[in-house]
Length: 351
Image (cartoon, rainbow, N blue to C red; front, side, top):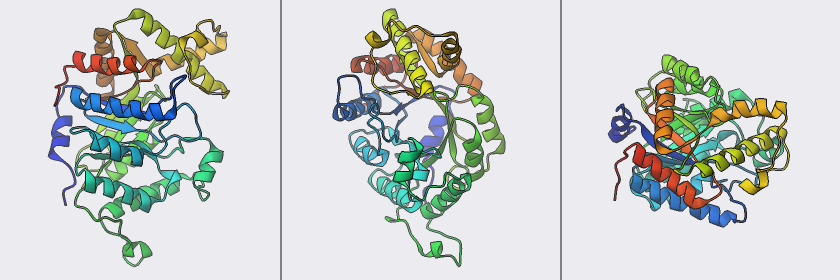
């Protein structure tokens, strides 16, 4: 059974920084969810040509600001309109789903696009507890349930189950010869330990928690147990990035992101923002303390500044892959940011 693409291992063995994308299909102010999905498609096509390595899409529920709720559906379309990208989930929120159904979804994707699919997984619900309970009424939010899901998933991908149990009689259909790249998403380090135990990749969400990530990745490497699917540890780091040659756009982007971070902190109504909505905002000393923390989650700057900062971050984490998450007011600015990153990191353009 072909389990790891040689191309994948060769790509990640170089010292040159590889760039990838995590896109959440953000709904801009005045735009529709339909347009947000079309913008995700356009971004995937562009980054495919620019030389990006992966394009992951997320799972969020019960929110009006992100349209990405079903990555397994969107992945199928994105892989069909691109040629080179590894396309995957960042991630499938496992507590929301039947493990067998996840295995069958991603086996079907492998049947359609063998060797190009990544299954990134998280143990958070990607929504509030009430919505999570409706998505999966049997969800108990127990860590042990997540661990059992991971063990079952590996068995399904390898057509095996513990002898003498009912799972030994179950097969994930279609039975294909390739296995998607399996990654765990982590913002605390705990899932890094699970990834090391099961021999899966680790993607650290610096854009969620900017503290302790490098140590978590190192612990993952130290404890990594090679698997038949991943003989060597693989890790990357994801963070908010916005690159522009226009200093005023950079300033306005920082202001909008700051306000958005505080919105989430305070648990108030969350909606799309523009600079005009936040330009007159006044922050308390407590707010300023929180903003000092949040400022580490996002990197903004002109191309040379971005390259220097991201290179230093990659060295700190000891990774050679950065996943950029870009949310901004103007879609053209979003496209341009990824283009500037590709240019400054000298990605190889593709047809």
